[in-house]
Amino acid sequence: MRHTKLFLTVSFLTGLALNLVTAQPLRGPVQGPIAPEAPPTWEPDKKVKGKRDHVDFALTPKPISDANMKFNHFSNRKLMIFYFSAKCPHCQHAFPYVQKLSDELTAQGFTSIAIAIKYNTEDDIRSFIRDYKVHMPVFYDEDRTFGENYGTGSIPLILVINEKGEYIRYKTFDSDQTPGMIKAEASQLASK
Image 1 (cartoon, rainbow, N blue to C red):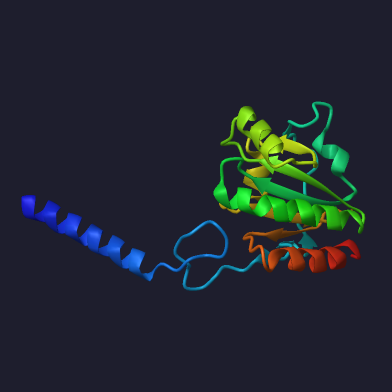
Image 2: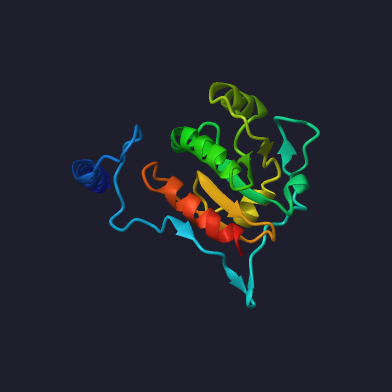
């Protein structure tokens, strides 16, 4: 039994050391291993019985930045949604780029909002709004309905939505490539 524990410990530490040796730095402040094949940066609208997926604006994320704001106020609009966690380093790194992108998409008639995942406190979200000088409406996915319907299990997540509610979902964020991709796709999606 003692030898088994020792073997498992040595195996674990050897595997950990190999992972650390082969890890490559990411661009930006967050470091970690890079997957052998990067996942697609964006995912086109899913087809459901020949129809495109649509965002359900009847969902009720809790408004944080303006208590009178309702999610359904954004239906029938061109919209970008930033789904994030206030404590996530990747989300914190991406947000300045997202806010700049939001400003640029405004010229194309887009509105932008942010929705914080369930695993935040309202104080965390308010601190994020203050610290990052957020100037878009912010909601809280308190009941997890938005994440269960549109999340992928990772954050940050960006949805670009046209007036019909059809969307393109961006599952990863690369500060060098994703903003340009979103601008190009937003133009195409808005014209559908």
